[in-house]
Length: 212
Image 1 (cartoon, rainbow, N blue to C red):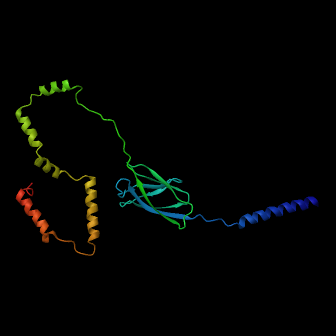
Image 2: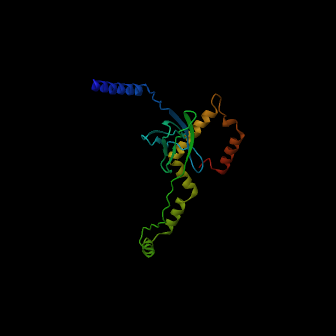
Image 3: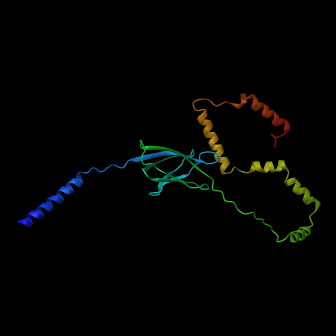
């Protein structure tokens, strides 16, 4: 009987401990919404398309064209911010936030690499270059042709025929969007009634820049 009593007590104790563990309430994990901007460290300009991710699971997001981002995280997480050409930075989410949100402005410094000065010559020595240059026997007309090709007006005309690069297209698009937002709900001004625009037009006719 003593053995049955002892086994019964042990079994009852185990059931009580299991019931006590099941009644314990698990503390819910609070998610913190982190919002902010990524800017350049030198001019504080918005840094578009920068990568923002949690170091815990390597999941995150990217900043928009205005450098804004929003990402959920847990208290104690480490948020890493990186972008091509800039130094990678990281910050930790505090454990004692009063509200489940956090605002951040993260600057990134430029990742500059200084290289030693290098001189590149198409010929091994100056003497070799002098010999081959004298063997060309250039005529006086070649000098005149070179001067004509280096004329500032001719260079400007050729430059106007070249298409815009990516930076110019981006700047033009942003300016157009800003102008549309500024004059939203109203008619934009017309330069036909602008005296300053007429003065510039007349000056362009006088100095011949309009023809070029």
